[in-house]
Structures are given as C-alpha cells and as structure tokens.
Amino acid sequence: MRRTITFRTTLHTLIAASLMLTALPAEAEEAPAAIVSIVTGLAPGDLLNVRATASAIGKVEARLPGGTSVKNLGCNDINGHPWCKVEEIGNPQMSGWAPARYLEPINPQPVGDAEGPANADQPPPDLTARLGGTETTLPSADAIGRTAIEDAYRLALAATANRSSGETDGPAPGAAGEIPCARYVGQPMGRCQASVVHTGGDSAVTVTWPDGGTRVISFSAGLPAGSDAPGEFRFTREGSLNMIRVGVSERFEITDAQVLGE
Image (cartoon, rainbow, N blue to C red; front, side, top):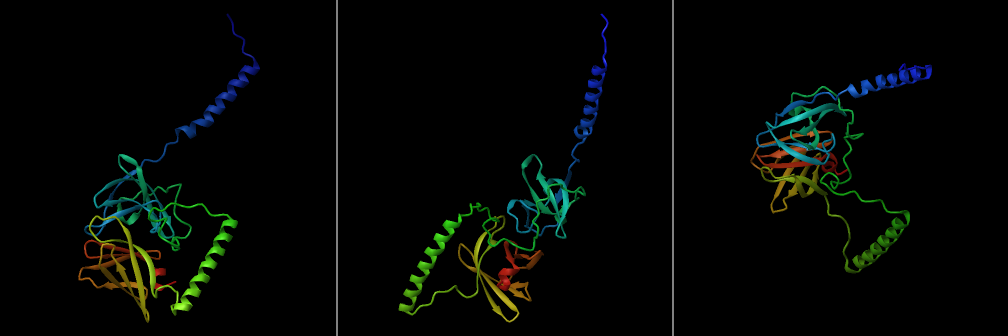
C-alpha cells in the first residue's frame, strides 16, 4: 500500500521537529556541579554560623564545627563581602549562607537566587526575626487608631499617678535592650539583657547572663577594646555588627547602634 505524503503533512512534521530542537538546549542544560568545601579558619572551639540570608544579621539555621564538609552551591559578593550558599551533604534540607573566608575551596560559580539584603549595614529594629520570631500581620488603620487612643489614655492615667506620688516615668538610663549571647561551649546563641554607659568617647556594655552573673565589655572609639574577664578577648566585624569572643566559650553580638546609643 502506497502512502501519499502531502504538503500539509510535511509542514506539520517540520514544525514539530523545530519545536523539539528548540527544547533540547533547555533540557540538556544541567546545573553546574557543586564543589565540596571544608569549614576552616575558625577559632579553637568556635562554630560556623550558617544563616538563612547572606547577612551577618540573618537567622542562624545551623552551626558547623571546623573540618565539616559541605556542598558549596556557589558564591556571591554581598555588599563587598563574599558569601557562599552551602548545603549539608546528605541533608539538602539544611542549607544556608556562610562567609566565603571560612570555606576552602570556594565555588566561583555565582548563585542566581542571592538572598542578601539590599543594605547589610542596616540591622533590623529588633532581634525577633533573627532569632526565629514569627512575622505578624500588620493591623488595619482602624485598629492602629484604637490602639493609639488606648495607649494615650493609659499614659495620661500613669502620668497623673506619678505626679501624685512624686515619681517620674522614663526608661532606665543607658538601656541597650537585648543582644545575642552564649556562655558555654557548644551552646546556641540566646538572649541576654544589656545596658550601656558612655564616658566621653568610650562605652561600657554590661551583659547580664540569664543564669546569673554579668560580663562587662569595653568599647573605645566605637570598637570593642576588652572585657572584665581574664580570658583572651577577640572580635570580628561584619558591616555594623561586632562579633565578640571572650575566653574559649563566651560569645556576643553587639551592633554599633547599641554601643553608640543611636
């Protein structure tokens, strides 16, 4: 039986072939192979913070000891600081960003979906998001108005009560709020109350441990200068964040704004 090939059949065949050829490059394109990097360059007993975003104030997803092997998916320059997207070998759910200087070798391939902030020098107004707090829905304009009226009413009542008792209402002098801290080796970063006292161009930040006791950290010209502990004192800076270590276990993270009272 002879088969007649018409012009329309030939045209349809050519169109289908061209569409298949167009799709081939996209299907044949493979993601670049990841590089296995080793965590290195840490201080003795220190751990590398793997953060959700390429920022020194990003939420900590995991902490890795020196010598750990990770899959390096690529590195980007974020505000002048190289960061690499890493993934735990055998556990792709554990991924995040780490400073490139603690990884050897680095992956020169850039990451397409960089998650760094527009300006890493601007820390969030508080540490809730960084330490795993949940994001709340913004209230409506009516709710904001009602809240403002209620707050004003409560403040007026408090002011009246203070005048009658001779007391004044105001924040404690030198209050710096809370800072991330850890007291013991291997302990995840938690929260510590901190207060700051300014003397000329110097400052002293007093950190109160949740389980009792304090640590005083001195600043000179806005930079960490020492502490009241006999152990070794050292620090590094990323943007406006001071990452401080005292001895073999104590760790603190204090922003310039907290030190300078801005």
